[in-house]
Image (tube, rainbow, N blue to C red; front, side, top):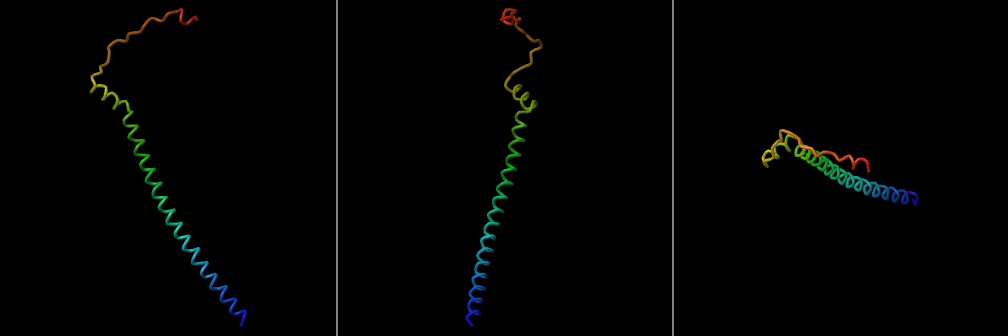
Length: 89
């Protein structure tokens, strides 16, 4: 009779332990799912930001802004003569 009571207590303790561990795993999986969604959202925002930076830095966009600000192309280049003394020092 004593053995049956001990086995019953052990079985009840194991069932309670199993339920507790299962609940913890479910809670952790919800947290992991939430973090995964946040990571995906941040990766998408990062990709969009990188595309916007690339668009703003493109030659077409920069040349268009320069034209709007009134900058014009010069037909000829002007260069200062290089002093030979500077190169020898």
